[in-house]
Amino acid sequence: MKTFTATPADIDKKWILIDAEGVVLGRLASIVAMRLRGKHKASFTPSMDMGDNVIVINADKIQLTGKKRAEKTYYRHTGHPGGIKSTTAGKILEGAHPERVVEKAVQRMLPGNRLSRQQMTNLRVYAGAEHPHEAQSPEVLDVKSMNSKNTRS
Image 1 (cartoon, rainbow, N blue to C red):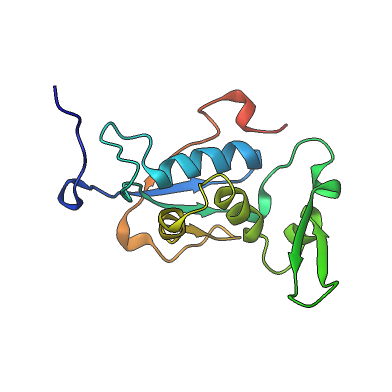
Image 2 (cartoon, rainbow, N blue to C red):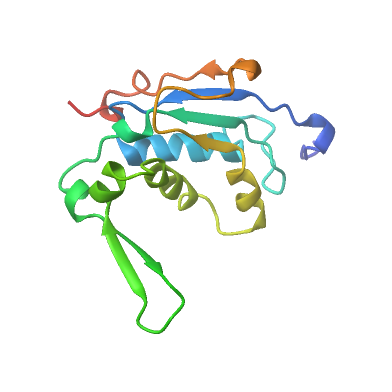
């Protein structure tokens, strides 16, 4: 029996649309990361970009459990000595770019290598319900109905 290794000719990419309204952030991010890597496919090969193109809409209506909206902290550095800056998840979600919370959650669930940076280019996150990818006719993936814990009441 031979081990199957995918080649670029074997890759079949689809477009997936996910509505993030009312979905818990970590559960959404793990599903999106799995789709981006291609681990949901039987022909998964770790060294190839096998994943689908994922569109996430309504990222500003994502849910966080517990006190994470007020206490979860994101750090960045200006590059100057003593230049560390911090902000909370709530401030980012209420600010101009709420989609960055979802992007960071997905990015941190992928391995930190060149392939995952390439796979992150297949992720498109939009704060509202509109997206410019209707021509690709994406399939809708209903994350809410997968598990009752995926939503927050």
